[in-house]
Each structure stands twice: as C-alpha cells, then as structure tokens.
Length: 413
Image (cartoon, rainbow, N blue to C red; front, side, top):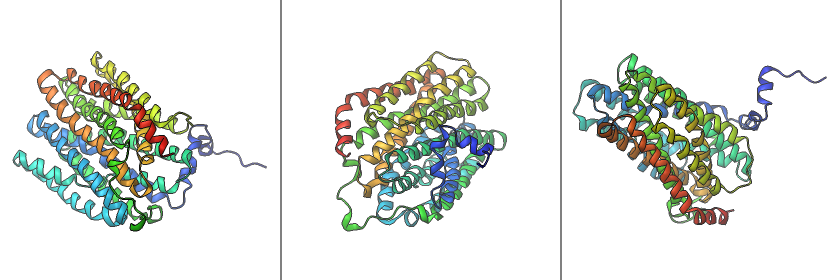
C-alpha cells in the first residue's frame, strides 16, 4: 500500500517546486545552503543600511549615495581579483582571511559613524570593508561543479541561486531599515556585518561541495574578461545593477518625502518578491531558445515594467509597480550568469562569474551615485528616470551585440 502524501510531500510534488527537490538531495549540501542563506541576508543589508545610516546622521542623500557607491566599486574591483585567486588556490584558503579582515573594517565603520567622525573616514572604512569575496560566484561555482554536464539541472540550480538571492533581498532590507530606524542608525550595518561573516564562515566550512582546484598545468592562459562575449554580458549587467542601486536610493527618498521613510522597505521587498516568484517559475521551465535571445527579452522586460514608476506617485501604487517590475530581474540574472559561466573554461568559472557580478556592482555604484544626485537636483520622484534610462540602455546593448554574443555562446557549445 502506498504511503499517503504528507503536506510537505504534496508541496514538493507540485510541478514547479518538484524541479528544485533534487538540489536538496545533493550530499552534504545543508551547511553550504545554510551558510549561504545567512551571508545573503547580511549582504542584502549593506547598501540600504549605509544609505539610511549616513542620511540619518548627516541629512545628505548625496553623501550616502557616494559612500555606498565607493563600497560597491571596491567590491566590484575585488570580485575578479579574489575570484582568480580562488580558482587557483581554493575557496576556503583564499576567502577566509578576507572575511575576517573586512569584518573588523566593518566594525570600524560603525564606530566612525556613531561618533561623528570626519566624512572622509567613512569613505575609507567602508571601502576597506568591501574588499571581500561575493557569495554569488562562490555558491554558483559549487553548483557548476556539482552539475557539470547536466544543463537542465544547472539551469534549475542557477535559478535556485537567484531565488535565494531575492529571498534575502525581501528579508534583508526590511530588517536593515527597521533596525536602523527603531534602534539607532548604525544598527542595520552592524547586523549586516554579523550575518554576513557568520554565514560565510559556515559556508566555507562545507568542504565536501567545494570545487577542486584545476592543476596549474591544465589551466588556460589569460584572463576570464578576455573571453569573447563576457564583456557584453557584464555591460548589460552594469545597467541591471544601475536599476538596483538607483531603486534603493529613490525608494528611501520618495518615502521620506512622503513622511513615511519606513515604507521604503516595503517597496524594496516587493521588488525582490516579484523577482523571487518569477525566478521560481523560470527555473522550473525548460527552454529551447539560446541564452542570448533570453537575455534580450529579459532586458526588454526590465525596461518596460520599470517605466510606469515615472507616472505613479502613490506609495502603494509604486509598491505595486515594483512588484511587477521585479519579475523581469530574476530571468535577467539567471540567464546572464548562466551565460557567463558558459563563456569561460572550467578553470575560470569563479573568475568569470565574478566579472559578470562586477558588472552588477559597478552598475549599483553608478546607480546609487547618480540617483542620489538626481534626488537632490530634480526631486525624489523624478529620479525614477535613472533606473528607467538604465533599462533602456540595457535593451540597446543586448540588441546591438546580439549576433556576436550568440556566436560566442554557440561556439562554446
């Protein structure tokens, strides 16, 4: 007699979620996933925590956006450099010392803000604290290792990664804003440092799923960034990151102008929720089209779905727009990061995805700085022109470079 389905079994047997069940059956995957979850939540808190902290202490969104932008820019520079070291020497050996050092720098940043230190010290401390390895390339490199030669399983795993990222961006910014507004301005950043460091230590302790180091004699020469097509993907992701960074700044500014600053966490959480839900569905589907074609479609969706923010002024209306707009971001990131790892050889996988994510981080840096400037010069709501314009540029770049990128993708097949 067949065993009756439990409630949990029934949930995982649904057509969409059943695609993800095999990921949870990978041997020794629990600490890998648990550590990743903590680190993602902490990482998702950094940007908005710094913006709320500095704008609360100084009253300047321009300064807040500039400090945040410097941190993201340093992170963007660090990503490929640390990624290359990790591909050569292994995740735990390289990443752990950086994690410990940057945690100390983060605590110094909290102290400097609390005591009202000179503004230039905030740039220095936050920049140093940002020279760390990103969770995204490390975690995705593990899935590439686990599912090499299984493209559909890898697609599902990459989608799971993006869903995990978006889940963190639902929890993290809300928690950061609440801590910083209800306790003291530095509380969000302090919690972010603690969550991120704890998560990374747990993640790096999961040695069973860590990708092996490719022997020196078997490594190709050159840099991942020189591989055909990778810079195009990174360029599209610069514009994607600009959407993310500017949305954070503008959401805080618009809600503060409306006298309800805490509502920024709702707007940002709904944007992430829309992306997460789209990612769950996207990862359960099989596609016959090329990754390049999907990249163009995702970029078009980002632009068209963000555009209504220019004309909707009611806060709940903006929240609804962001929920819908977020549904284009998960397909964009899943597609682009899968394409990035496909364009590089196995020995460059961490470095290659770090280059792609560097594009996102540079875009976030540009987006936060430009949006902060736009808020102060044109007004909070008018600054939504920044993410909308970034979406349009992403469409143009993906369309103009469609054929060379598709050739690079198919040449690697």
